[in-house]
Length: 289
Ligand SMILES: O=C(O)c1cc(C(=O)O)oc(=O)c1
Image (tube, rainbow, N blue to C red; front, top):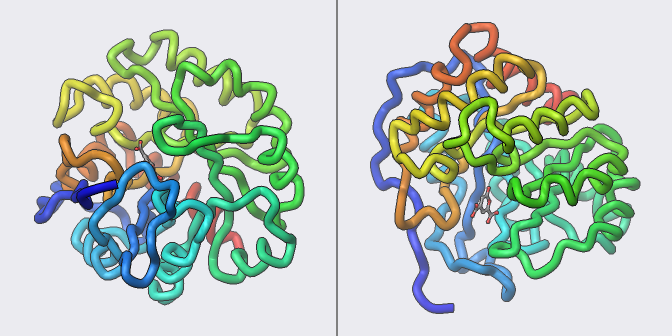
């Protein structure tokens, strides 16, 4: 792999919207720093360093109190960079790990002690070489108490994944709503299929995130707002929100993080919805203990 890429805004604007005190950015990542935490040999992109100092400065700039750091695919199953960032946060970050499914129970417990509260299964072919459902199911059956599974998939494989998701014995969190085509609107086939998934179990959460990835119309992402606001309104206890900083793979269409924060009141217009989305729901998943 050749040049390292920068996928984040160098000076994001200050959002107009002020998150409530205690708000959690519940989907973000760290990259490296590479000299200390090399990227995986299987990484599909090679980013510039985006370490904890930058992440915590952004957190403060945007008006958030805490982070949930999701292990990025470029670090493979070595969670050292994410654990380092959690350790440096002074209790203000928790994480989601990516593991080799053969991981031992002792190693899972060590991840718990380091602040992890879930594992991520990534089904995007452009990000990972394989996604062995049988092995994923096996490890999902022996997670530490209180953990959940985060799944990242695209809308076209939702149906195929239904039996797999139904068999997972812990709560599920779906990254970026399983990437629906938001141009179909709130009642389009992708949103209908996603609602059917949410209706199949009452412990499936979702992230109404990444307008920059999902709305080809671009900032201010009006299709995203129209398609997603009804979902948040109808499932207010099941959504958590995040910036997705440093926006892996978005180097050609880098979003302004301040504008991303300004999407929050458009998809969660009341104070009550905002409190659930930004505080109550992520606290339940990540800071229950
Ligand atoms: O769509 C993506 O490219 C993407 C990649 C990663 C990752 O590399 O972990 O995480 C995300 O949340 C989204």
